[in-house]
Amino acid sequence: MRVAHGVMLWVLLAGCGGVGSSSSGSSSSGSSSSGGSSSGGATPCELGTLPTSVSVSEGGRLKLPLSPHPQNAVVTASAPPGWSARVDTGPRQLVVRLPYGITGAHPLQLTAQCGSASTTATVEVTVRALSWQQVGPWTPDTEGPPAREHTVLWIDEDNPDRLFLYGGYLFEPRQYTVGNDLWSLNLASGAWQRVTTSNPSPDVAGWRVAPVPGSAAVLLHGGDTSDGSLNNTTMRLRYEGDTPTWSEETTTSNGFGSSLSAFFHDAPRDQWLQVCGIRGQSVHCRVHAYDGLGTPESWYEVEVADDDDGTRPVGRYGFFWAHDEETQRFIMFGGGRYPVSQADPVNAAEDAWALELAENPPRWRRLFETQSVVRGSRNGCWALDTEGHRLFIWGGTPDAATTIPGLYVLDLERGNEVLERIDVPGGPEERSSCNGIYDPARQRVLMGFGNNSQAIYADLWALQL
Image 1 (tube, rainbow, N blue to C red):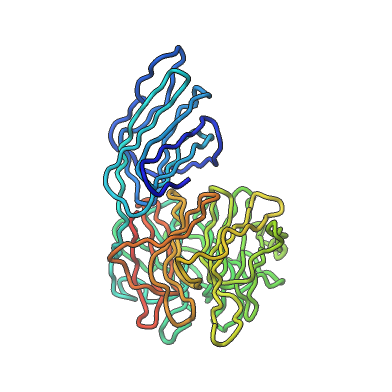
Image 2: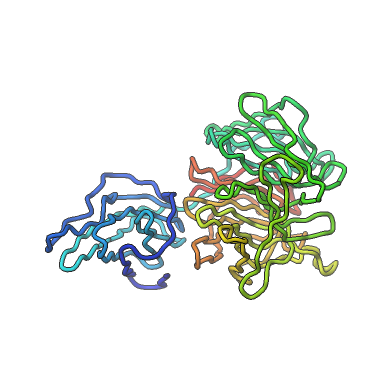
């Protein structure tokens, strides 16, 4: 729940409700306490081993472990206005969501009541302000990659200090030139290096990338080739060692490749999913799966169910999206739809949807129809903050001529999927056709490249969380 004014007091019943998660969402500092002292009763009334102080970004999420005993304990938490909380049961923990626009140190007081016995403890929560900082800058094409749009980014799972960038649409010798260059960025030092592959790189742009778990490799699927035709070939890039290698994973004869779609690995079902996208003049929202076996039949269409009201999202491309592993959902907002007139070439969607991947068949759920804080757009930047459980949204165009101003964030907590604008001073120029990625080792979101009506960009900015 959210309270707009006054000091908030939550009553949280031990062992009740909530969805578990493994990410911490905070960094702790200082010593730990035993959760305070007990009074009355023979059975200890415990809160658990709590830190005395923690640090979390504004709008972020804080998780505090709670003792599983006794089962009948009632836990209350007193905190500043605008904070909200719930109890998760696996493992048992207090999950606190902070509002935006606050910084500094704030006390969070917890009390466990077990009949006549009680225990209290206070955790000092230091709230960090969000801030922008440029990575680099660099001289394009010599010290780092030149300007481009719709490139793909990923971070080496085995080396969190190494980010890869591949291809996209270049602006030289003309816009929409398909690039096939591979670069790596040392996230610790900020230095770029051009990477040479052992065999020719594919001339494809507008495709998406997804990791191959447990290996130094990614899959790339969909997009358009340099001659303008659709790409139905799934490629694998192995990047272990100094010389990465390309190989063909599979070629589909059924035309499942799409541009500006979503593509990700769904670990519980060990499959890769492509959702929505554009194929020439066809804009769709079908779901296709790849089983990883490397045959033409390995790609197939997935049967999905409608929402309870019989609806599902209309076709779209260039939308903002996240694979939310914590809730086993695919979530998307906005995107361009099939144009209804020359006066509105984008026909931007303003709704948000979730595809419930754990259901059989997967089911579409509408999260909201529209929210007045932002117009719908296509081809902006986005990045999923897995610790904060939120999707950052920036840029994009509603009309193929102008750029949406401001930075937005979508709360991904079930039942509270709220989109709001947040003000962070000193950031980069808004643009479209850009890219974003979450850098977990440094607790920041990286966004950059793309273009607007005034400029093209070869840059990267860090939103420090």
